[in-house]
Length: 477
Ligand code: ADP
Ligand code: MG
Image (cartoon, rainbow, N blue to C red; front, side):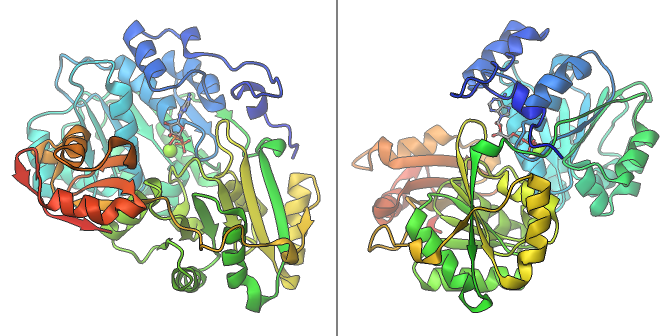
């Protein structure tokens, strides 16, 4: 495989003077949509957007393959939203996703992109949440639903969901839905949709099952693929040879040397994840694990803390991290070498997104050298080795996350907004606005990041203040 990916010809113009990427204004989009994209900071299309939008906006069925973080959501959200008739409160588009987290992420991105229009109702229908609330929301109507196949099936079966007016079906992360055994549920849901519709299938990989799924549900689809290769220059990869006994402790040395704000550390097993997190926490790092055994609520909290920069190291298996939009990472650490060279490419692609340079640090033991040679072959270049002795702590303090996260136990349906939380925190002798980070409004809780050294002050202040006229329970995660 060549390292010269199609992505590099259409990705945003780099300082090295690559050709400028196409803007959204080349597409037939309304002025409100264009203005909103501009407001979101989407100045140019990503490679997959540039390749797919002309096809999807023309109404064709599509199979689109591109790596995680390449902007696939907007690639289906834009055509879907463009076709909506806001005056008809009926479900006109459905997006199926493999997990609740992914469905939540898609809903968030859809809501941001839908701001161009007044009052587009988007509902998330996933398991892990009681069905009553979803049935209630459905009774009030929605334009778009985003859900997992299982829950959508349940709601269809009970007659709470009517898909008779749907004109767009999106299968997001289709490869993963197949891995999770959703083939039959997808088929069942599709059988409740009008035959006259557009179907858009998105996937990070293109295994055989996808071709079969597409043959069943898509009509003369166009197939496009943006290679899973990264711009070689954008990610600096460093390799360190370690013995098994020094592997985990070396992760701490890497962190103290490079001091990245956010790092995703990949292990091959859950066991290794657990041991690494224990070691890092004992050494004073803010590290959390993401693995399949966490409850949904715990997973959500881990991801929020990582996104809010309150956790500097997220330790994950490939399965747990797959498909998640965890972006803008300073570093990825391959604690173990993956036996699959393609997985390596996906892992390191988590760093160095859009216009940022990335750092991928790799620990390799003697017996992993054979696997590593596969990776070198696939990347078309040799590993750059560095000495462990070169790792010197950049400061006497262990690396700390810059922020801490406060959890507010208040439900979304109370219509709490980020501004309410910001107002409560800054008002009346509270803390300065520039010490406050990201605010995340969740279904059952909201989360706000505050500068770490002010966490206790902020906690006390919030506990003694009303948020939107109410006393809310707050805790420090
Ligand atoms: P994927 O589904 O391919 O993993 P996402 O749709 O989650 O990727 O997008 C990854 C990130 O890139 C998101 O934070 C999204 O807001 C951002 N993004 C998408 N399109 C653009 C664009 N054209 N310009 C800038 N950022 C974008
Ligand atoms: Mg996605």
